[in-house]
Length: 90
Image (cartoon, rainbow, N blue to C red):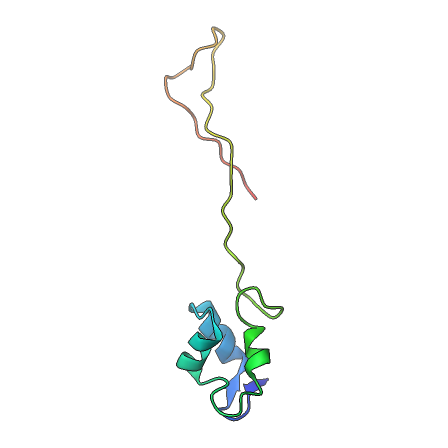
């Protein structure tokens, strides 16, 4: 599907630019020429940016996790003297 008819820019090209790091309409305009002629496609192009409803890019978010806890033996002290990291899967 064409996103920008004036410059013959396809949805696939916009998605590739976003996957390659484009994060703003200015980035898409610089890289592809989207919305540089009549501007009608600007709203559609923005929907492909991170956070847009057509975005294929997930937003990165920081994960918080519990601190590593050493495994204790029967006496209550660490069995091997160093903590074992806890790995959490999302």
